[in-house]
Image 1 (cartoon, rainbow, N blue to C red):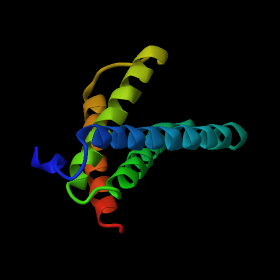
Image 2 (image 1 turned 90 degrees about the vertical axis):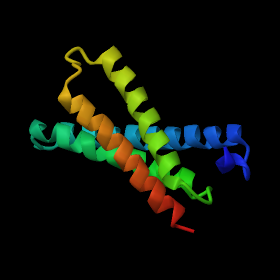
Image 3 (image 1 turned 45 degrees about the vertical axis):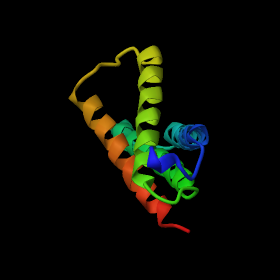
Length: 129
């Protein structure tokens, strides 16, 4: 609890939620750009999983950097929380709208990637001042 001495714990979680929302908004923007590019060019559809992973990494990293820049320490923690929240939201959206959605080892790997990416983004953000 000593971590929350300098700031209100509810404002900390609001900042984490804001960072997650920023990451999701960037993700939506990048997916729209990629969709338009895929529609009007001859890009191979085999690139979709790779590009989706890159977009996820960019979204989580941007949200983690945004949030951890406000903090004075433990950016890895806020970034990791953003990665977890981001992944949970994407998980539920995928489960609702993707017919071929399956829980497999790749989903676990993506979840771990989300947490690690968030932690790294948080560490980067804490050092950008």
